[in-house]
Image (cartoon, rainbow, N blue to C red; front, side):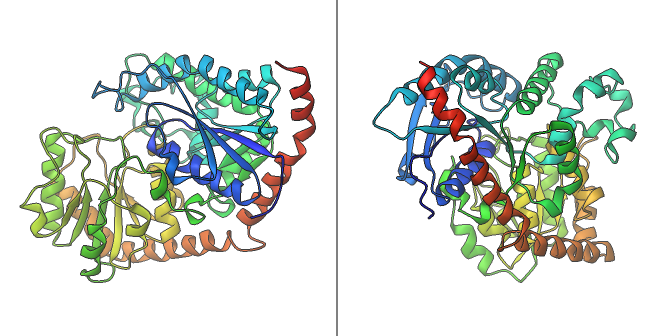
Length: 457
């Protein structure tokens, strides 16, 4: 680890699995560059501090009713609540940290992009703010285009126009726009706009991606934002995401994978939030069973109404677990395809490990990610969910990947991307250089930070 004394960074993650993982992985990367790490976090989904003895953790109240079983899955309401209720407690905590003379001065704040209110806090306390966007650059560019999309009538999304192409954002269609089903779409629009505007005013923007994968989207953002942008992924290659998992891993699936033929297994996981209906569960079960291929299926508790994830009929051909060590699974030689919701972490992990995808996006940026996987990078096949899942469609998607020439071509392209993901991490690679640039950039902010320490509070 490099020695850079007197450089403390404060990180503030959004308390969802797909956001906590990359933020704490980023913390590990920055710590390896010699920075001291302090994490401010909500009581809801608080990280396990014992996994990070070299970090300092400070909880803040969030006023969430954690006994409400619908609360974690109602993303729109959860985001609205957190961005409203956390500003005061966060500012109070950060101010106390600034006054703590026994600790190192704060070099800068690194916050999740969705916590847009932290820009105002950083300006009031005169602490430079750098933003981590945990999604891809491709979807963030679409969020940045929301005012234009609204002006042109693409937003709010209308059912009659779902298949219409968005010529200005090719190859996206209206159905691919990163929205969430909500009774108040205007509030969602305001959240996205606030996220983008606050990011434009910050001191830098970090992405868990790499240059060769999203160069076009990154170049567009650099042109529009006029701030330093640092693509320093894939994060999971620097540290295991299992440390920050909010759900215990079932390691027995690895020994099951050890008994399967190379490249034969379909790995199925829809992430930590997305849920499916009972009829969808039945069609997925029959589609997997009829495919004739072994499968590893992650079914979280309560993710399917009336199903506990321990279906004995299914386990005759496959393995069902409540949560899996995903990176270890994707890197296993027996895994030949990943049926995914296309969350960004899952997408990037699949690309990094060279596993072709069956894409079934559920909401928000997953739809953009899926379109890029299938139509831009061409390393996966799309499985439409909007018109209902059907076991025959599932079998055809599996057949396309495993048995047809299209699948062979997809695998070749995926192996090429995997190689690029590996090369970017090596000395001289784009991510290697970008990490060094980020560390230097943080150090360049020190004069503003230290003068602020004397004039604030």
